[in-house]
Length: 325
Ligand code: GZL
Image (cartoon, rainbow, N blue to C red):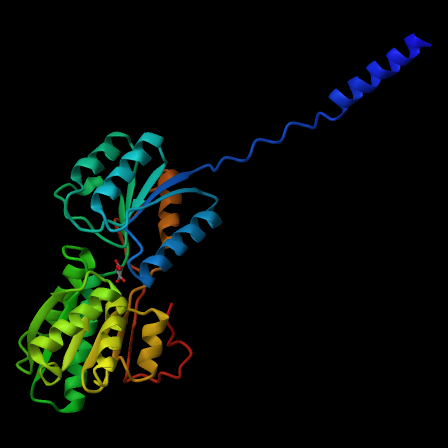
């Protein structure tokens, strides 16, 4: 009897040990392609929407995404690129916060055989082989659209002269350099316009407020007719200050801005902003299409610009196509 019980117990033990052994979990499917993405920060709604676009597009493409946020520090972007090289990602995508200072680290990526895609911002380099492609706005065209709007507005108002204050984005960044250049070239030679100041707002709403206070202290509300601001975040900061001072934005002082975020387009619809030049943050799909081409050994174009428009107070703002991101 004792033998039978022992036999039964051993049988039970075997069942417990081996019967419960599940099939080994299938290896979690590793992505076929891994992208190292160095994002420059989270300074504006535009930047946050851009990050979301990259995350969504990489997921839809089935690519792994290693993202590092540099919080507006170039050295952190350089460190992130070095970590992507060490990890041997398939492609590096990055938005250079400023145009200069990238050649060394991009040469390291080149030596490692990792292609680099510039997204949203350009670099200044004598060696164009350091990057495979640029996908992002034509900032010069955006600045020109802003200037061309102002000419049209001055014609419509029949004014003899307008004092313009410019609030600039991050110093030495591509959007700052080219939005300035496009705007100034558009209004150049028109004697109705005087640019009385160009101040640094670093694309931040808080600095937009500071710039507005500084400009009002220097020139008074009657000394400024137009504020041209390189992005909506700074413009919305300006708008808050003008209203606090009892100044009617869009009427006492014309506001021209770039990006096209919802809050700015809504302010345009409410007559508080006069012109919103579009700059789409939704670059993720185009960036991932470039990744796919590069990892399939296909040639890619050196520059890809998205379609972008402009909304102004001359438009039918009830049209559903007039909307922000
Ligand atoms: C433009 C982008 C700029 C946005 C700002 O493509 O680089 O940076 O205009 C953002 O809102 O901070």
